Amino acid sequence: MVGLIAGLIINGCSPRSKYERRLKHELASGVRYDSLFMGIYLGMPEQDFYTHCWMLNREGLIKQSSNNTTVEYAIKEELKYPATMNFYPEFVQGKIIEMPVRFIYNGWAPWNKKLSSENLKIDVLKWYEKVYGDGFIKVKHSKRGMAYIRIDGNRRITIFKEDDLHVWAVFTDMSVKRDLNDSTSKAGIIHDEITKDLE
View 1 (spheres, helix red, strand yellow):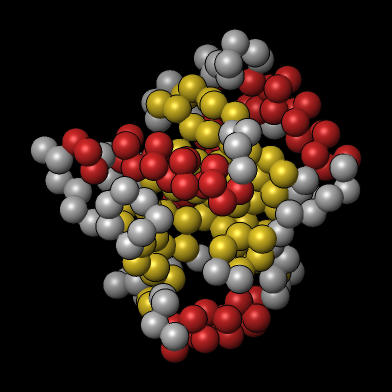
View 2: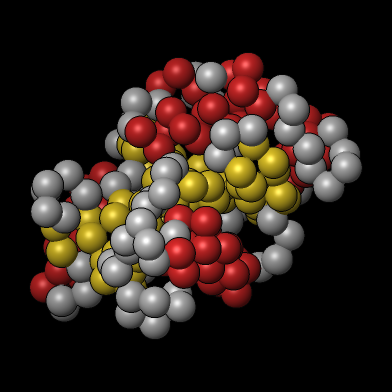
């Protein structure tokens, strides 16, 4: 998988150099951006996450996914069309260090091109630019098309499509040292495929 991104191009610059300059600058700033969404944040203790989700569930804002392995949120206004967002964090030493978020347009069908993952990816990007700010680096990947990366202080956000249906946004605390091989989720594996050579 690692060899798949040998031909990455970011706005005509070396992907590695542009990414490393941005990462070094942001980490050196000492500024932390831990906010994710719905009151969840990087570094949040595991028990606090469960308690917080329980409260959001009581308010009717979220629910368990159909397979009971993720948290599900119904997107009604943030994107162009009704969609579903599923998420569940990765914990290290009992705190959130990464949050993979998976999106799908509810009305997707192979013949409904406006609800394709390619269009969904752009819609998620536009939404996140409003919430987290402009400045996403565009990355061309040989198999997955364009991916988008933004780094603010310790927080990295990567947006990419998985297949014809699904789009991922992965939030990562870059101040936490860990082996990339620790990623075991599907999102983590794809995410590492896109970013490993950059790091």
